[in-house]
Length: 456
Ligand SMILES: NC(=O)c1ccc[n+]([C@@H]2O[C@H](COP(=O)([O-])OP(=O)(O)OC[C@H]3O[C@@H](n4cnc5c(N)ncnc54)[C@H](O)[C@@H]3O)[C@@H](O)[C@H]2O)c1
Image 1 (cartoon, rainbow, N blue to C red):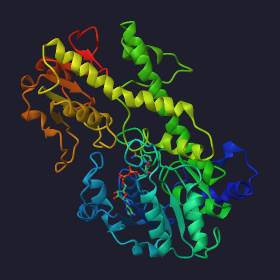
Image 2: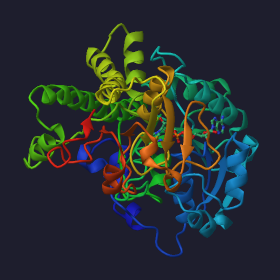
Image 3: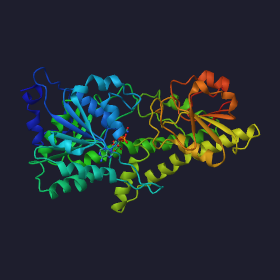
Image 4: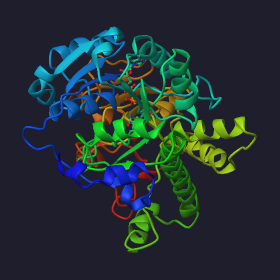
Protein backbone atom coordinates (compact mmCIF):
# COMPACT_ATOMS: atom_id res chain seq x y z
CA UNK A 1 0.00 0.00 0.00
CA UNK A 2 1.48 3.37 -0.89
CA UNK A 3 1.27 6.66 0.95
CA UNK A 4 -1.79 7.72 -1.00
CA UNK A 5 -3.92 4.69 -0.21
CA UNK A 6 -2.80 4.36 3.41
CA UNK A 7 -4.27 7.77 4.23
CA UNK A 8 -7.75 6.55 3.28
CA UNK A 9 -8.47 9.94 1.75
CA UNK A 10 -9.68 8.03 -1.23
CA UNK A 11 -12.54 6.29 0.52
CA UNK A 12 -13.62 9.46 2.30
CA UNK A 13 -13.56 11.38 -0.89
CA UNK A 14 -15.41 8.75 -2.87
CA UNK A 15 -18.22 8.91 -0.32
CA UNK A 16 -18.35 12.65 -1.04
CA UNK A 17 -17.79 13.43 2.63
CA UNK A 18 -14.91 15.86 2.20
CA UNK A 19 -15.10 19.53 1.58
CA UNK A 20 -13.57 21.20 -1.47
CA UNK A 21 -10.04 21.65 -0.12
CA UNK A 22 -9.71 17.96 0.61
CA UNK A 23 -10.33 17.10 -3.00
CA UNK A 24 -6.82 18.14 -3.85
CA UNK A 25 -4.40 15.28 -4.13
CA UNK A 26 -0.87 16.50 -3.61
CA UNK A 27 2.12 14.90 -5.27
CA UNK A 28 2.63 11.31 -4.25
CA UNK A 29 5.55 9.81 -6.04
CA UNK A 30 5.42 6.10 -6.70
CA UNK A 31 8.35 4.65 -4.78
CA UNK A 32 10.81 2.19 -6.27
CA UNK A 33 9.19 -1.19 -6.82
CA UNK A 34 5.74 0.32 -7.19
CA UNK A 35 6.05 1.58 -10.75
CA UNK A 36 2.66 1.47 -12.43
CA UNK A 37 2.47 -0.73 -15.48
CA UNK A 38 -0.33 1.06 -17.30
CA UNK A 39 -0.29 1.48 -21.00
CA UNK A 40 -1.61 4.85 -22.13
CA UNK A 41 -2.80 5.75 -25.61
CA UNK A 42 -2.59 9.42 -26.53
CA UNK A 43 -4.70 10.42 -29.55
CA UNK A 44 -3.53 13.65 -31.20
CA UNK A 45 0.15 14.47 -30.83
CA UNK A 46 0.17 18.26 -31.06
CA UNK A 47 0.97 21.02 -28.58
CA UNK A 48 -1.04 19.22 -25.88
CA UNK A 49 -0.67 15.53 -26.77
CA UNK A 50 3.09 15.43 -27.33
CA UNK A 51 4.17 16.92 -23.98
CA UNK A 52 1.58 14.76 -22.20
CA UNK A 53 2.79 11.62 -23.93
CA UNK A 54 6.39 12.43 -23.01
CA UNK A 55 5.47 13.08 -19.40
CA UNK A 56 3.71 9.71 -19.09
CA UNK A 57 6.74 7.98 -20.63
CA UNK A 58 9.14 9.87 -18.35
CA UNK A 59 7.10 8.58 -15.39
CA UNK A 60 7.68 5.02 -16.57
CA UNK A 61 4.37 4.34 -18.36
CA UNK A 62 4.26 2.71 -21.79
CA UNK A 63 2.68 5.07 -24.26
CA UNK A 64 1.11 4.56 -27.66
CA UNK A 65 0.85 7.82 -29.61
CA UNK A 66 -1.76 7.97 -32.38
CA UNK A 67 -1.96 10.75 -34.96
CA UNK A 68 -3.55 11.01 -38.40
CA UNK A 69 -0.58 13.11 -39.56
CA UNK A 70 1.94 10.61 -40.92
CA UNK A 71 4.71 13.26 -40.99
CA UNK A 72 4.41 13.65 -37.23
CA UNK A 73 4.49 9.87 -36.71
CA UNK A 74 7.62 9.54 -38.86
CA UNK A 75 9.41 12.38 -37.09
CA UNK A 76 8.58 10.98 -33.65
CA UNK A 77 9.71 7.49 -34.68
CA UNK A 78 13.03 9.09 -35.58
CA UNK A 79 13.20 10.89 -32.26
CA UNK A 80 12.58 14.29 -33.87
CA UNK A 81 10.40 16.94 -32.24
CA UNK A 82 8.32 19.35 -34.33
CA UNK A 83 7.61 21.69 -31.41
CA UNK A 84 10.32 24.31 -30.93
CA UNK A 85 10.48 24.16 -27.13
CA UNK A 86 10.50 20.34 -26.93
CA UNK A 87 14.05 19.12 -27.59
CA UNK A 88 14.66 15.90 -29.55
CA UNK A 89 16.58 14.60 -26.54
CA UNK A 90 13.35 14.37 -24.52
CA UNK A 91 11.89 11.97 -27.08
CA UNK A 92 15.10 9.96 -27.53
CA UNK A 93 15.52 9.50 -23.77
CA UNK A 94 12.23 7.59 -23.43
CA UNK A 95 12.08 6.04 -26.90
CA UNK A 96 11.89 2.53 -25.41
CA UNK A 97 8.59 3.47 -23.73
CA UNK A 98 7.06 4.90 -26.90
CA UNK A 99 5.17 3.46 -29.83
CA UNK A 100 3.71 5.62 -32.59
CA UNK A 101 1.11 4.81 -35.20
CA UNK A 102 -1.59 6.19 -37.45
CA UNK A 103 -3.69 3.15 -36.74
CA UNK A 104 -6.19 3.57 -33.90
CA UNK A 105 -6.66 -0.19 -33.53
CA UNK A 106 -3.41 -0.10 -31.55
CA UNK A 107 -5.44 1.49 -28.76
CA UNK A 108 -7.06 -1.88 -28.02
CA UNK A 109 -4.22 -2.87 -25.72
CA UNK A 110 -4.23 0.41 -23.73
CA UNK A 111 -5.54 0.79 -20.17
CA UNK A 112 -6.10 4.50 -20.70
CA UNK A 113 -6.93 6.45 -23.86
CA UNK A 114 -6.50 10.23 -23.73
CA UNK A 115 -7.94 12.42 -26.49
CA UNK A 116 -5.98 15.57 -27.40
CA UNK A 117 -7.35 16.50 -30.84
CA UNK A 118 -8.12 20.07 -31.99
CA UNK A 119 -11.41 21.81 -31.22
CA UNK A 120 -11.40 24.84 -33.56
CA UNK A 121 -14.17 27.12 -34.75
CA UNK A 122 -15.86 26.60 -38.11
CA UNK A 123 -14.35 28.55 -41.00
CA UNK A 124 -15.66 32.04 -41.57
CA UNK A 125 -16.64 34.39 -38.81
CA UNK A 126 -19.51 32.39 -37.34
CA UNK A 127 -17.93 31.74 -33.94
CA UNK A 128 -19.43 28.25 -34.11
CA UNK A 129 -17.59 25.24 -32.65
CA UNK A 130 -16.25 22.69 -35.08
CA UNK A 131 -16.22 19.48 -33.10
CA UNK A 132 -15.92 17.24 -36.15
CA UNK A 133 -12.31 16.30 -35.33
CA UNK A 134 -13.21 15.40 -31.76
CA UNK A 135 -16.24 13.47 -32.97
CA UNK A 136 -14.13 11.51 -35.46
CA UNK A 137 -11.58 10.70 -32.77
CA UNK A 138 -14.35 9.58 -30.39
CA UNK A 139 -15.83 7.34 -33.10
CA UNK A 140 -12.42 5.78 -33.76
CA UNK A 141 -11.84 5.17 -30.06
CA UNK A 142 -15.33 3.78 -29.46
CA UNK A 143 -14.86 1.36 -32.36
CA UNK A 144 -11.87 -0.22 -30.62
CA UNK A 145 -12.95 0.26 -26.98
CA UNK A 146 -12.38 -2.73 -24.70
CA UNK A 147 -13.78 -3.62 -21.30
CA UNK A 148 -11.68 -2.16 -18.48
CA UNK A 149 -10.44 0.85 -20.45
CA UNK A 150 -10.62 4.43 -19.23
CA UNK A 151 -11.24 7.07 -21.89
CA UNK A 152 -10.39 10.68 -21.06
CA UNK A 153 -11.07 13.82 -23.10
CA UNK A 154 -8.52 16.61 -22.61
CA UNK A 155 -9.71 18.85 -25.45
CA UNK A 156 -11.26 22.18 -24.58
CA UNK A 157 -14.93 22.07 -25.44
CA UNK A 158 -18.40 23.25 -24.41
CA UNK A 159 -20.07 21.91 -21.26
CA UNK A 160 -21.95 18.74 -22.08
CA UNK A 161 -19.66 17.47 -24.85
CA UNK A 162 -18.23 14.47 -22.99
CA UNK A 163 -21.69 13.29 -22.00
CA UNK A 164 -23.33 14.03 -25.37
CA UNK A 165 -20.65 12.53 -27.56
CA UNK A 166 -18.60 10.02 -25.58
CA UNK A 167 -20.87 8.73 -22.80
CA UNK A 168 -23.77 8.29 -25.22
CA UNK A 169 -21.66 6.52 -27.83
CA UNK A 170 -20.19 4.14 -25.25
CA UNK A 171 -23.69 3.43 -23.95
CA UNK A 172 -24.83 2.75 -27.51
CA UNK A 173 -22.06 0.18 -27.86
CA UNK A 174 -23.65 -1.69 -24.94
CA UNK A 175 -20.94 -0.99 -22.33
CA UNK A 176 -21.86 -0.03 -18.78
CA UNK A 177 -20.12 3.20 -17.79
CA UNK A 178 -18.27 2.91 -14.50
CA UNK A 179 -18.22 -0.89 -14.72
CA UNK A 180 -17.09 -1.89 -18.22
CA UNK A 181 -15.66 1.41 -19.43
CA UNK A 182 -14.64 4.46 -17.43
CA UNK A 183 -15.00 8.00 -18.76
CA UNK A 184 -13.35 11.21 -17.55
CA UNK A 185 -12.86 14.78 -18.65
CA UNK A 186 -9.61 16.50 -17.71
CA UNK A 187 -8.92 19.86 -19.37
CA UNK A 188 -5.39 20.60 -20.48
CA UNK A 189 -3.85 23.78 -19.06
CA UNK A 190 -0.70 23.95 -21.15
CA UNK A 191 1.08 27.32 -21.37
CA UNK A 192 3.34 26.81 -24.39
CA UNK A 193 6.86 28.11 -23.97
CA UNK A 194 6.43 29.00 -20.29
CA UNK A 195 9.64 27.77 -18.61
CA UNK A 196 8.03 27.88 -15.13
CA UNK A 197 4.97 25.74 -15.78
CA UNK A 198 4.95 22.38 -17.53
CA UNK A 199 2.37 19.61 -17.79
CA UNK A 200 3.89 18.11 -14.64
CA UNK A 201 3.56 21.07 -12.27
CA UNK A 202 0.29 22.56 -13.51
CA UNK A 203 -2.52 21.25 -11.25
CA UNK A 204 -4.70 18.81 -13.17
CA UNK A 205 -8.48 19.02 -12.97
CA UNK A 206 -10.30 15.71 -13.31
CA UNK A 207 -13.96 14.76 -13.38
CA UNK A 208 -15.56 11.35 -13.94
CA UNK A 209 -18.86 10.22 -15.37
CA UNK A 210 -19.25 8.21 -12.13
CA UNK A 211 -17.22 7.92 -8.94
CA UNK A 212 -15.56 4.77 -10.25
CA UNK A 213 -14.59 6.65 -13.40
CA UNK A 214 -13.16 9.49 -11.33
CA UNK A 215 -11.03 7.07 -9.31
CA UNK A 216 -9.56 5.72 -12.54
CA UNK A 217 -8.76 9.23 -13.78
CA UNK A 218 -7.12 10.28 -10.51
CA UNK A 219 -5.12 7.04 -10.53
CA UNK A 220 -3.58 7.87 -13.91
CA UNK A 221 -2.75 11.52 -13.33
CA UNK A 222 -1.40 11.17 -9.80
CA UNK A 223 1.39 9.09 -11.33
CA UNK A 224 2.38 11.92 -13.61
CA UNK A 225 1.51 15.35 -12.23
CA UNK A 226 2.24 17.07 -8.95
CA UNK A 227 -1.32 17.91 -8.04
CA UNK A 228 -4.67 16.49 -9.05
CA UNK A 229 -7.84 18.43 -8.29
CA UNK A 230 -11.18 16.73 -8.68
CA UNK A 231 -14.51 18.34 -9.47
CA UNK A 232 -17.99 16.93 -9.14
CA UNK A 233 -19.15 16.55 -12.71
CA UNK A 234 -17.92 16.31 -16.28
CA UNK A 235 -19.74 19.57 -16.99
CA UNK A 236 -18.02 21.37 -14.11
CA UNK A 237 -14.60 20.40 -15.45
CA UNK A 238 -15.54 21.43 -19.00
CA UNK A 239 -17.03 24.69 -17.74
CA UNK A 240 -14.05 25.48 -15.48
CA UNK A 241 -11.64 25.40 -18.41
CA UNK A 242 -13.89 27.87 -20.24
CA UNK A 243 -14.09 30.10 -17.15
CA UNK A 244 -10.28 30.28 -17.10
CA UNK A 245 -9.91 31.20 -20.75
CA UNK A 246 -12.94 33.48 -20.93
CA UNK A 247 -11.61 35.49 -18.00
CA UNK A 248 -8.34 35.93 -19.87
CA UNK A 249 -10.08 36.83 -23.14
CA UNK A 250 -12.23 39.50 -21.51
CA UNK A 251 -9.37 40.99 -19.51
CA UNK A 252 -7.20 41.23 -22.61
CA UNK A 253 -10.08 43.01 -24.35
CA UNK A 254 -10.36 45.42 -21.42
CA UNK A 255 -6.67 46.30 -21.51
CA UNK A 256 -6.83 46.65 -25.30
CA UNK A 257 -9.64 49.14 -24.84
CA UNK A 258 -7.70 50.93 -22.08
CA UNK A 259 -4.82 51.23 -24.54
CA UNK A 260 -7.11 53.34 -26.71
CA UNK A 261 -8.04 55.44 -23.66
CA UNK A 262 -4.35 55.85 -22.73
CA UNK A 263 -3.56 57.19 -26.21
CA UNK A 264 -6.10 59.97 -25.69
CA UNK A 265 -4.11 61.18 -22.67
CA UNK A 266 -0.71 60.49 -24.22
CA UNK A 267 -0.08 57.89 -21.53
CA UNK A 268 2.09 54.82 -22.13
CA UNK A 269 -0.32 51.96 -21.33
CA UNK A 270 2.58 49.56 -20.66
CA UNK A 271 4.12 51.90 -18.09
CA UNK A 272 0.70 52.22 -16.53
CA UNK A 273 0.19 48.44 -16.29
CA UNK A 274 3.69 47.92 -14.83
CA UNK A 275 2.93 50.61 -12.26
CA UNK A 276 -0.52 49.21 -11.42
CA UNK A 277 0.99 45.74 -11.01
CA UNK A 278 3.06 46.98 -8.06
CA UNK A 279 -0.20 47.00 -6.10
CA UNK A 280 0.13 43.78 -4.09
CA UNK A 281 -3.58 42.91 -4.14
CA UNK A 282 -6.61 43.19 -6.37
CA UNK A 283 -4.83 43.83 -9.67
CA UNK A 284 -3.67 41.29 -12.25
CA UNK A 285 -1.50 42.52 -15.10
CA UNK A 286 -2.75 41.96 -18.65
CA UNK A 287 -0.98 43.55 -21.58
CA UNK A 288 -2.42 45.04 -24.75
CA UNK A 289 -1.32 43.81 -28.14
CA UNK A 290 -2.21 43.48 -31.81
CA UNK A 291 -5.03 41.01 -31.05
CA UNK A 292 -5.46 37.58 -29.49
CA UNK A 293 -4.15 34.35 -30.98
CA UNK A 294 -3.47 30.65 -30.46
CA UNK A 295 -5.75 27.65 -30.41
CA UNK A 296 -7.34 28.57 -27.07
CA UNK A 297 -8.05 32.14 -26.00
CA UNK A 298 -9.74 33.45 -29.19
CA UNK A 299 -11.73 30.23 -29.57
CA UNK A 300 -12.78 28.80 -26.22
CA UNK A 301 -15.06 31.67 -25.07
CA UNK A 302 -17.07 31.14 -28.26
CA UNK A 303 -17.56 27.48 -27.35
CA UNK A 304 -19.12 28.68 -24.10
CA UNK A 305 -21.26 31.32 -25.76
CA UNK A 306 -22.43 28.93 -28.44
CA UNK A 307 -23.48 26.41 -25.79
CA UNK A 308 -25.31 29.15 -23.86
CA UNK A 309 -27.07 30.36 -27.01
CA UNK A 310 -28.39 26.82 -27.49
CA UNK A 311 -30.13 27.38 -24.14
CA UNK A 312 -31.38 30.84 -25.12
CA UNK A 313 -28.72 32.98 -23.39
CA UNK A 314 -26.25 35.22 -25.26
CA UNK A 315 -23.21 36.25 -23.21
CA UNK A 316 -22.73 39.93 -24.00
CA UNK A 317 -19.29 40.27 -22.35
CA UNK A 318 -17.89 37.61 -24.68
CA UNK A 319 -19.42 39.33 -27.71
CA UNK A 320 -18.00 42.70 -26.68
CA UNK A 321 -14.57 41.26 -25.92
CA UNK A 322 -14.60 39.54 -29.28
CA UNK A 323 -15.42 42.81 -31.08
CA UNK A 324 -12.62 44.65 -29.27
CA UNK A 325 -9.96 41.95 -29.63
CA UNK A 326 -10.77 41.34 -33.28
CA UNK A 327 -10.64 45.08 -34.06
CA UNK A 328 -7.07 45.44 -32.80
CA UNK A 329 -5.45 44.19 -36.01
CA UNK A 330 -7.33 46.88 -37.98
CA UNK A 331 -5.98 49.54 -35.61
CA UNK A 332 -2.46 48.26 -36.21
CA UNK A 333 -3.00 48.40 -39.98
CA UNK A 334 -4.30 51.98 -39.63
CA UNK A 335 -1.21 52.97 -37.66
CA UNK A 336 1.03 51.38 -40.30
CA UNK A 337 -0.85 53.48 -42.87
CA UNK A 338 -0.36 56.68 -40.85
CA UNK A 339 3.32 55.94 -40.22
CA UNK A 340 3.95 55.34 -43.92
CA UNK A 341 2.01 58.48 -44.78
CA UNK A 342 4.35 60.44 -42.49
CA UNK A 343 7.19 59.59 -44.88
CA UNK A 344 5.03 60.23 -47.93
CA UNK A 345 4.29 56.59 -48.82
CA UNK A 346 0.97 54.85 -49.36
CA UNK A 347 0.51 51.26 -48.14
CA UNK A 348 0.25 50.12 -51.75
CA UNK A 349 3.65 48.91 -52.98
CA UNK A 350 5.30 49.62 -49.61
CA UNK A 351 7.77 47.07 -48.36
CA UNK A 352 6.72 46.01 -44.86
CA UNK A 353 8.83 43.80 -42.60
CA UNK A 354 6.92 41.96 -39.86
CA UNK A 355 8.89 40.72 -36.87
CA UNK A 356 7.27 37.67 -35.29
CA UNK A 357 4.45 35.59 -36.75
CA UNK A 358 3.59 33.37 -33.79
CA UNK A 359 0.69 34.49 -31.61
CA UNK A 360 2.93 35.05 -28.59
CA UNK A 361 6.61 35.34 -27.92
CA UNK A 362 9.17 32.54 -27.83
CA UNK A 363 6.99 29.85 -29.43
CA UNK A 364 6.32 28.58 -32.94
CA UNK A 365 2.51 28.43 -32.94
CA UNK A 366 0.98 30.68 -35.60
CA UNK A 367 -2.62 29.50 -35.28
CA UNK A 368 -5.07 32.42 -35.14
CA UNK A 369 -2.07 34.74 -34.87
CA UNK A 370 -2.84 38.46 -35.21
CA UNK A 371 0.43 38.79 -37.14
CA UNK A 372 -1.16 36.80 -39.97
CA UNK A 373 -4.35 38.86 -39.93
CA UNK A 374 -2.32 42.07 -40.10
CA UNK A 375 -0.10 40.69 -42.86
CA UNK A 376 -3.15 39.58 -44.82
CA UNK A 377 -4.86 42.96 -44.47
CA UNK A 378 -1.72 44.86 -45.50
CA UNK A 379 -1.13 42.47 -48.38
CA UNK A 380 -4.71 42.93 -49.62
CA UNK A 381 -4.01 46.68 -49.65
CA UNK A 382 -1.03 46.10 -51.93
CA UNK A 383 1.87 46.02 -49.44
CA UNK A 384 4.75 43.66 -50.07
CA UNK A 385 5.16 41.57 -46.89
CA UNK A 386 8.32 39.94 -45.60
CA UNK A 387 8.49 38.36 -42.15
CA UNK A 388 11.11 37.14 -39.74
CA UNK A 389 9.97 34.27 -37.55
CA UNK A 390 12.88 32.48 -35.86
CA UNK A 391 10.64 29.75 -34.41
CA UNK A 392 8.92 28.74 -37.59
CA UNK A 393 9.43 25.28 -38.96
CA UNK A 394 11.72 25.23 -41.98
CA UNK A 395 9.25 23.93 -44.56
CA UNK A 396 6.36 26.20 -43.56
CA UNK A 397 5.23 28.64 -46.24
CA UNK A 398 2.52 31.26 -46.17
CA UNK A 399 1.09 32.49 -49.48
CA UNK A 400 1.31 36.23 -49.07
CA UNK A 401 4.39 36.37 -46.79
CA UNK A 402 8.05 35.85 -47.65
CA UNK A 403 9.70 34.35 -44.58
CA UNK A 404 13.39 35.13 -44.18
CA UNK A 405 16.18 34.67 -41.63
CA UNK A 406 17.10 37.80 -39.72
CA UNK A 407 20.72 37.43 -40.87
CA UNK A 408 19.68 37.81 -44.52
CA UNK A 409 17.67 40.99 -43.90
CA UNK A 410 18.79 44.49 -44.79
CA UNK A 411 16.42 46.56 -42.63
CA UNK A 412 17.06 49.68 -44.69
CA UNK A 413 15.38 48.02 -47.70
CA UNK A 414 12.02 48.17 -45.93
CA UNK A 415 9.77 51.20 -45.74
CA UNK A 416 8.53 50.09 -42.37
CA UNK A 417 9.20 47.45 -39.75
CA UNK A 418 6.40 46.16 -37.48
CA UNK A 419 7.07 44.35 -34.21
CA UNK A 420 4.07 42.02 -34.06
CA UNK A 421 5.52 39.39 -31.69
CA UNK A 422 8.25 40.38 -29.26
CA UNK A 423 10.45 37.28 -29.21
CA UNK A 424 13.22 37.61 -26.62
CA UNK A 425 15.84 36.51 -29.16
CA UNK A 426 15.45 39.69 -31.24
CA UNK A 427 18.15 42.35 -30.81
CA UNK A 428 15.85 45.31 -30.17
CA UNK A 429 18.64 47.89 -30.02
CA UNK A 430 19.95 46.77 -33.40
CA UNK A 431 16.41 46.79 -34.82
CA UNK A 432 15.76 50.34 -33.57
CA UNK A 433 19.06 51.48 -35.02
CA UNK A 434 18.48 49.82 -38.40
CA UNK A 435 14.87 50.62 -39.36
CA UNK A 436 13.65 53.63 -41.30
CA UNK A 437 10.26 53.44 -39.61
CA UNK A 438 9.44 51.24 -36.63
CA UNK A 439 6.02 50.31 -35.22
CA UNK A 440 5.82 48.55 -31.85
CA UNK A 441 2.63 46.66 -30.94
CA UNK A 442 4.06 45.05 -27.80
CA UNK A 443 5.46 47.93 -25.77
CA UNK A 444 8.97 46.62 -26.21
CA UNK A 445 10.48 50.11 -26.32
CA UNK A 446 10.22 52.75 -23.65
CA UNK A 447 8.14 55.51 -25.20
CA UNK A 448 10.29 58.31 -23.74
CA UNK A 449 13.59 56.91 -25.01
CA UNK A 450 12.37 56.14 -28.50
CA UNK A 451 10.09 58.97 -29.50
CA UNK A 452 10.45 58.17 -33.18
CA UNK A 453 8.87 54.74 -32.73
CA UNK A 454 5.17 54.47 -33.46
CA UNK A 455 2.97 52.60 -30.97
CA UNK A 456 0.10 50.50 -32.26
N1 LIG B 1 -2.32 24.48 -27.65
C1 LIG B 1 -2.55 24.80 -26.40
O1 LIG B 1 -1.83 25.58 -25.81
C2 LIG B 1 -3.72 24.21 -25.64
C3 LIG B 1 -3.81 24.45 -24.27
C4 LIG B 1 -4.88 23.90 -23.55
C5 LIG B 1 -5.84 23.14 -24.22
N2 LIG B 1 -5.74 22.94 -25.57
C6 LIG B 1 -6.76 22.11 -26.21
O2 LIG B 1 -6.19 20.85 -26.50
C7 LIG B 1 -6.73 20.31 -27.71
C8 LIG B 1 -5.60 19.99 -28.67
O3 LIG B 1 -4.95 21.21 -29.02
P1 LIG B 1 -3.49 21.22 -29.66
O4 LIG B 1 -3.04 22.62 -29.58
O5 LIG B 1 -2.65 20.16 -29.07
O6 LIG B 1 -3.85 20.85 -31.18
P2 LIG B 1 -2.77 20.47 -32.32
O7 LIG B 1 -3.40 20.85 -33.61
O8 LIG B 1 -1.43 21.01 -31.97
O9 LIG B 1 -2.67 18.88 -32.24
C9 LIG B 1 -3.75 18.05 -32.47
C10 LIG B 1 -3.27 16.80 -33.18
O10 LIG B 1 -4.38 15.92 -33.33
C11 LIG B 1 -4.24 15.23 -34.56
N3 LIG B 1 -5.53 14.64 -34.90
C12 LIG B 1 -6.65 15.22 -35.37
N4 LIG B 1 -7.63 14.30 -35.50
C13 LIG B 1 -7.12 13.12 -35.11
C14 LIG B 1 -7.63 11.80 -35.01
N5 LIG B 1 -8.89 11.51 -35.35
N6 LIG B 1 -6.82 10.81 -34.59
C15 LIG B 1 -5.55 11.08 -34.26
N7 LIG B 1 -4.99 12.31 -34.32
C16 LIG B 1 -5.78 13.32 -34.72
C17 LIG B 1 -3.71 16.30 -35.50
O11 LIG B 1 -3.08 15.72 -36.62
C18 LIG B 1 -2.74 17.04 -34.59
O12 LIG B 1 -1.43 16.50 -34.67
C19 LIG B 1 -7.72 21.36 -28.20
O13 LIG B 1 -9.00 21.04 -27.72
C20 LIG B 1 -7.25 22.64 -27.55
O14 LIG B 1 -8.28 23.57 -27.37
C21 LIG B 1 -4.69 23.45 -26.28
